[in-house]
Image 1: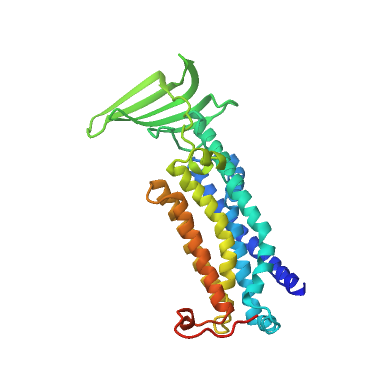
Image 2: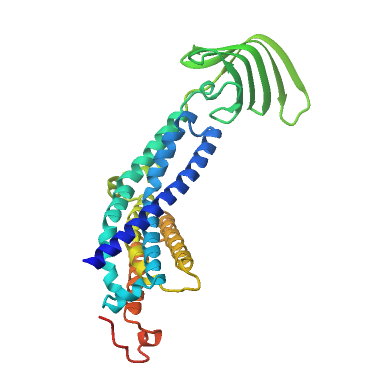
Length: 367
């Protein structure tokens, strides 16, 4: 039908343009955030691209949902402002008639959101966790870049070293600032190399000086040495507890702890929200030539932010045991669906609030 094909084509053009803009914005934000993590030593600088890619892949369900919602609101706003909606209404197409072509266009995106949030989201978070844990498992000396100060894994020492070996086991101009057992010490030497003693790695310093001071006291002890050894620590072990966002969806169902149920509610809720937002877009969009499209888009953005925050709030409530999993899903998403359908029905039939409250008989409905 001409009506269905026209609506779907308009939605496709608007959705494509919106998706490109949102992906560009999100990728820019993710790049800045990832570069900040790399500068703080949380992410390997050589793996910034991988971390940003996995992060963007994990946020793609939210981007798709928002793009679909904005595309629906933008398309309907254009039809109102250019009087195209009047033509369809005069020809006998009520607002309810728009729901079918909109859902016909939206179902591939809804399916993509479901696959991404239920399968890809935990996988991408798991990959990011593995990259960060692998980077954290490096020894203290491997954390140091030539010419840069770097904190150790336990946060008690700061290293500076000029590495000159291929395997980063030897270096020149070594500087170590440490705080341990109530004492502060600064050690510097011209040469340093790694030795394995009793299955532990030690940094052996040659021809250097050590300045030591007890915290809270003014006395300073200065000593020179020809050979000095300090343990540079074992590799940092990976955390035994996997974060809920990196747990597979099937495992969340098989192990229904409060934290897992909270994460599961967030994933399922995002899929249901994508469907509800399509109906909300049809219900809230109206003609207002004074504000143009901006008014509808501002209202759409406000609704999306509030709805998304309620989904996140529900996740924290379920994880804390304040609400139950199924009642929350029914109350939030079922309530939003009923409200959207009621709003759409009122606008479709041109009812006033007095008629809705049965204070006066309803007017004749549109076909």
